[in-house]
Image (spheres, rainbow, N blue to C red):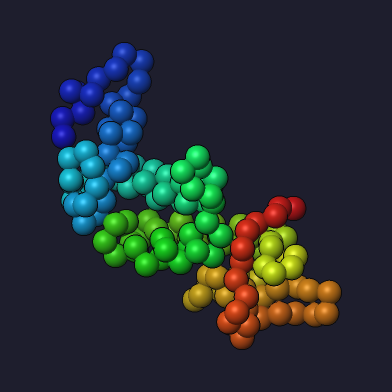
Length: 148
């Protein structure tokens, strides 16, 4: 797309292009132009990932925020098709890396002490009774991030 046609005084054309294309998807199923893969501006691909994460994990008038683990699982399922796989994997790995030492809500409050680089949602948790390995506790998931 010709970025000169997106000219807005004082704003780089790349910003307008990013905004225009951030709903496009790698498989061509996005909008407004149903662009595919390399035809989508790279910054639009990054913003698309952040936008979807934010939309799924936030309360909206039309839906409640999804639990954290469901957002990550759904986005991981979309890694080939909707999103650029390299960008999405970097996003998920960076996001999970920021959780080390943070409190999260499972079925009770826990603290993440270590992220599993091969299964991002299967972390080691520090609990009142010791260390909990979510690889072994299949029924427990990270519901939401609390902070700290």
